[in-house]
Amino acid sequence: MVITGDNHLNYYSQKFGSKLAERRSQIGRAWRETIDYAIDKKADIYLNVGDLFDQISPRNPPRARVIEAFADLKEANVKSFVIAGTHESPATMIEGASPHSLLQEANLARVFEDTRSFGQEILKVGDTSVSIAGISTDRRLHLNMDPLENITIPAGADFNIALLHYSIEKIAPPYWEEAMIRMNSLERNKQIDLFAMGHIHQHMTKKLGNSLIVYTGATEHFNFGEAKNETGFYYVIIEDKKIKEVNYIKTKSQPMTQLKIHTSTLSVENPTKTISDALVKASDPTGLLQLVLEGEIRFDNYLKIDFPHIFDDGKKRNFYYEYLDNIKPIAEGIEYKPSKGLQPRNELISIANQAIEKADADNKKFWKRALELAISYYDQYGEV
Ligand SMILES: [Mn+2]
Figure 1 (cartoon, rainbow, N blue to C red):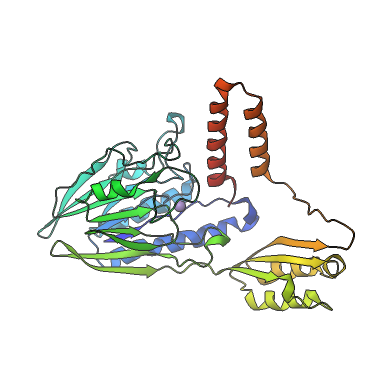
Figure 2: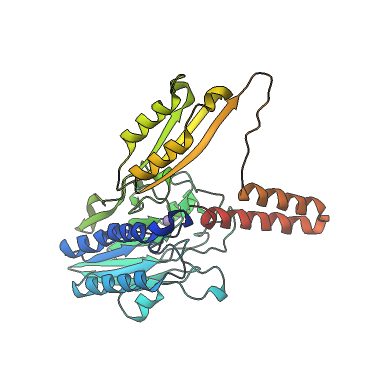
């Protein structure tokens, strides 16, 4: 079987401007590798563990590509199973159904849309019965809540699989303060042989008793913090009711580099040259590059850096270029306060704190909860 997730089709970031379409088609190409691989290897099962789409209402072209791909799988006799992840699971009734409910309607995949209880299907592959149970991400769960609390995951076959899109305590710590699966919930569900997991973009496998936990990781990089991750998916072979092989298959992602330069390494006479030389080396006309300058520097030396030149050069030499200024200029006798620019996240926190302060004792907890929700939403959707 092929296990994949965190493909983020119809990815959105305003930073790409006119290049967004090209970036999206690269993201689509990396995901399509998972489909072609399953067909090529004559896999029996294709599992998508959530965040197939980046948004709950993707545009029609990526929807069409997805329908086409799952039709290709069906034609090749690959059975597909899908859950909705953080980015595509509706948080309210008003948001309607997740975007892949269409796959279920067209009978191209089994989509486990329920967020409160597991759906299950048992199929026969050769002599082996395989149970696939799945649950979609419940975005209404609060911090410190365990999505598997009091839940026994349905099983009962020779080989039992669970599809989930959450963090796990200790094994895959959350990005943000959010719901997470407790270790004892996994240990209680020993009947599951394979936990196929989405959400954390770094791939990994972990043995827990006789169960195997597989985080498929993402098929592309979605921010510069992920630049060093491998991108790909898993191909798992079951034989004699046991896992025989776990293979990580890399996808060809767009080159992405985060270039960090510390001020202590800059030439005093010509700091621009030190930066330019490093930039030229790290650049790739097909790739994404983020330059980060950090450390302290004397103010007169800071002024020597030819930022417009570096900017033009970075733009010219890369598919996408951006610069992060973490430099702290220092001057004798002058205390320099770096301009913080527009910091919407901090603004949000400070406004919420004012509201919490002003509220009477009864209402404080509601404002605190509103702050938690606003920040968790902002961290998921506000920035790349
Ligand atoms: Mn994701």
